[in-house]
Image 1 (cartoon, rainbow, N blue to C red):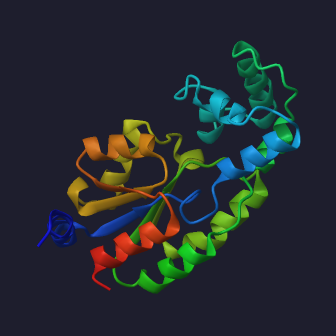
Image 2 (cartoon, one colour):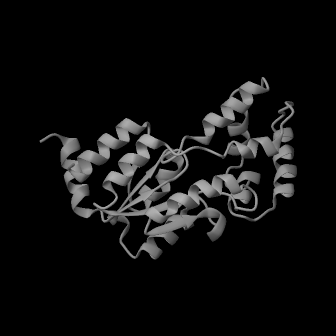
Length: 219
């Protein structure tokens, strides 16, 4: 029995809940839309992510996802942050927000629905309020029925990767951290979860994730 099989076996005996990220795992990644926007206006690739990553725990994007500011304030702060980073490209922040309107990842969703009765599913997602982006929220709302518990940054005022949001999730799920397998497409969001004792899996692509979960659930 190789090491990976042993690890999966041990996890299988402990895990009671799979905690899913939503955007970029069960949907297409909004990062792809950011790149399309940048390409459309001849803006250097990665510009939007550069702004979002600067002062990442307290920037405009973080405040928006925690519902601490309205859209107008976000636009003002986002452009100020771009200026601080010496980004001279003209940015249409309204259009950038539309990049969050992503389609469900059909292949991943089909697999999700196939396995959802085998174990409890919950969701932890960074999102923005419905009043700011109704389309993106409509996609999420239509799917949220498949989770026993849903944790949205815009509703609880905390967001990944803040350690407090993981502690909040653990308390609400009423399980030990080692009883949770957290799936996210961003390593920065997985590190705090691991530090608390959760099992984690980074989604690189759909097929790898399906293979991992098939092995884990022994299907």
